[in-house]
Image 1 (cartoon, rainbow, N blue to C red):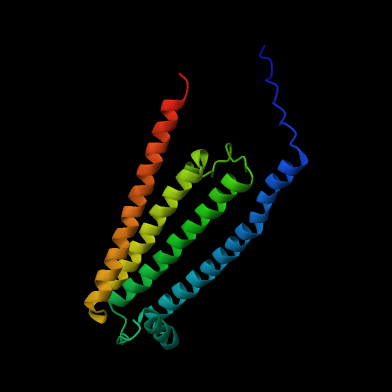
Image 2: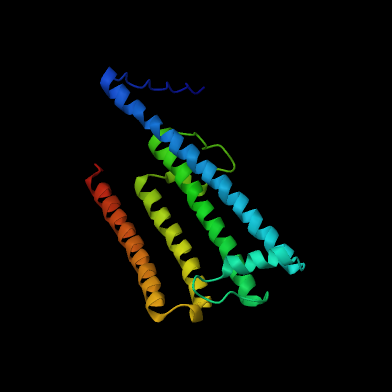
Length: 203
């Protein structure tokens, strides 16, 4: 017969530390605001998808909206729905999805890390990364998500390369490389910190 383990009661904080610790709930409105931003992205996604389907079906208003959406500032707007135009619209939809994924990581991971535990250990839909999330893991995953978003924007630029000058193409490529190097630096720094913590732990 197994004896149930007694749950350890949390230590009672003094008034000032308790008040300071309670201020973490001030972040809650920020995460709720990000949820509203997520709703805006969902609405935008369905508007763009509806226009794309309408353009394929021959709706003139949807077609003009698609042309305006993929037009490059200062460039020539497309005049027909071809493979490049459809690809640009689809890349825009993928961009919205990736930004939404980034929002989910910030909302769930940030709330779990900085505000309060959600106790999703037994939930079948718990994200795999949430079981070992901390500030360092969250930073690395956010950096990887930003690289993915930057890759989509860079691909859209390369598809419309004729509408951009060489300086713009080089600048966007350099910015993307800087994102890559930043993510590598964050991951390497996190690896050093984890290795140092493991070395200092008593065996």
